[in-house]
Amino acid sequence: MKKKLTQLPIWIAYFFILLFCYAAISKIFDFENFQVQIAQSPLLSAYAGFVSYAVIIIELLIVLALIFTNTKRLGLYASLGIMVAFTVYIFLILNYSEFIPCSCGGILEKMGWTEHLIFNIICILMAIAAIVVLERENERRLTHYISLMISVIITNIGIIIYLFFSSEQIMKKENNFTRRFMMHPTLEQKSLQLSDSHYYFAGYDNENIYLGNRKFPQTLLTVNKALSNQTSIRINLDNMKHPFRNLKLAVKAPYYYIHDGTVPVIFRGRLGNPKSKTISFNDAYFNQLIVLDSLHFVLRTQSSETRQFVLADLNLDADHKKLQLHPDILQKQIDGVFDIDGSFIADNFRSQLIYTYTYRNQFIVMDTDLNVQKKMNTIDTIRLAKIESKRLADGIHKMSAPPLKVNLRSAVHKNLLFNQSDLMGKHESKRAWKEASIIDVYKTDKPEYVGSFYLFKKDKHSVSDFIVTDKYLYAIINDKIIQYQFTKPITKYFTSGEAENRSKE
Image (cartoon, rainbow, N blue to C red):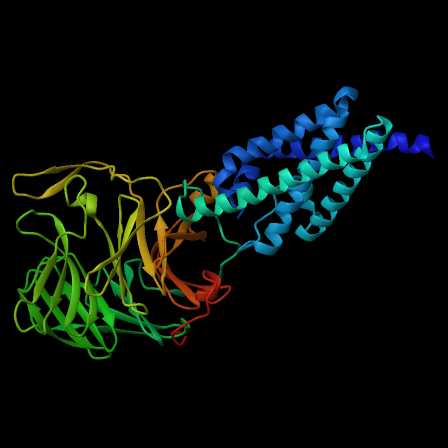
């Protein structure tokens, strides 16, 4: 019996040699995938680059330590430490993580998370048994090796807990451009064939989605949210003599608005009625417009003095000055035009306005009076717009070199900003990047990155526009509307709170 006990550390050492050899080699042969999966870990996202190399190196060093007699004791303590670390990691994933990521390769890939937790606990008990027998053989004091094992266990628990909290801080507030991909947040449900690929979302209400068409700008297409019915009208303008260049539609029930900022005119019509009337003329030139109510708008215009883009308030019901400029909101970096270009959108459920810069990693949260509430960053690292522009003699700015786009387009719903990014993050799959559009999600009430997900391309076409509701994300991809259902209601999936002011769908 005593001889069997003396052989126990040897056999357990052999077991760990095989285990860590297999684990390390499988990670090496599939290293890119292993590194991507580590980057998706809620505990290790921020340290994916370091951890992916460190784990393999530590596993191979433990194997070497276990092979040689003089270092076998060190190898067993190291085996205990790393198995404790793996076990605590899995425990935190199962009990405290916002989502459970994919496996990290090796044996874990063949087991479920709970099964692997049990397997790790067994490995810990084996390591403890081997250490106790080996230390008794060497006639070391019980208190000595018990205190040493406790120190190893506590140290590794502390390391994992530190990584958990510090990684959460870095990922959510100090992100180093490492994305965290959510586990199946959306499922494709339905699609609707459109007549061409020139449609864009003009608005939505409780029942319907409204689309404009860049090629046929006087066409208003109404589609119910189930994508089962559609109707189209051709809008008649009460004045067709204007030199229109770029007519666009916006819908806020019960009205639709058709406008062309290069001509200072806004028309308004009632949904279902093709006749529209001029409600504003010569009040403002603009290049983006948001409808607040039937006679109140916010827009992006260009200052006649500085030639820079500025945000403005247009109130047609005002007794005196209808247009109020807010020149201090958009911050110039280079030319005041391209460097502050971006998308201007509204969260009607929270009475918020969001301006997301196209060429830098920032978005601005405002109330409907254009008072800045917060300035927050997207997770990429482009703080200074990487553009080159030239101002011509007539005052017009033109790009003199291809720019680096950061943010393509955004949608906002109930304190959540959904941003389509144009940059690939660290440790991401190049193949997935080529096959999908990436949507990053942020909170608008506090500086926090929530996570990211893919919207896969259709016939090599990517998302050209999208909107978000409580239950669905609707995307236009080429000549189709695709309906994606959130696997949980939006306010439950992306936040811990319950849904409020939910729209009917």
